[in-house]
Image (cartoon, rainbow, N blue to C red):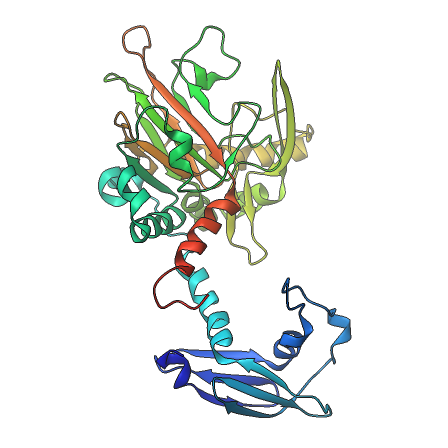
Length: 380
């Protein structure tokens, strides 16, 4: 038993259990929450709940909380049966909230002031593969900052490298896809054209969570990567043009992609909010937006005004992180947060070849959580 758990101080009120740990951290556990999480009410093998919320008393009240050798015994008013909770389990539950705060996005607005190599996580592929602590720190910063880099990745090793990051998502483009110029491309990504800032595949359900791009050969003349933090830009819009922000959060945009082997359609807002009102996703792709359903003046004019305001932010170079991938380098980024683009180049003069893939969002967060759980001294 850790010193933190052994030295806990336990108090209670009728409505809550209050625990103070040796390191000074505190946890508050509502009586109804404890009543809902009695260990005996879960299947011992699967851990799944055996009761429903309607089976609980509406307002359970704690009569007494008694510490007992690493546990706390809870007795309720008007109930004959008590329940025992392990203090280390309560500690982990309290810690989960702190870990979620630790993994919250750290937004960056003025990308032009940042340097890719200096301000974002970067690790050698071989080192990240061998060192769990390095991989844990790298994944943590990927989730926090939305962008991270792997260096010295051999040609053809993109999918092998992504085993360190998460689960690759197969799409109509395959497990991996080549980004290079081809005649009459079905997607403008496969041309020499510069691409404005955008997120990929908003026409897909679900939208790919993360994307990786591996530089196999780069152009010394053009083809620079452009990145911007969509969360920071959305909050900037909320602060300066709140009406436009709110309109973009409640208007479903149609996105459509057609090719010889795919016909994909989905509707979603340009700015998506969580239940708490925080920006949780940005979906912006001017190349794949379909005609909007609102054609009347009353619908179209205010929407296009708001749409232009956000698009104008993407054109401002002060918000853009600009860099050139080195051969053998992979950039991994949050495709529901980070907008990416590139400058134009000439494939006739210099071949430019990237290989890319998508990763599921939950698998990246799961990989980071498993590495945090494996830290020395952390109870699983």
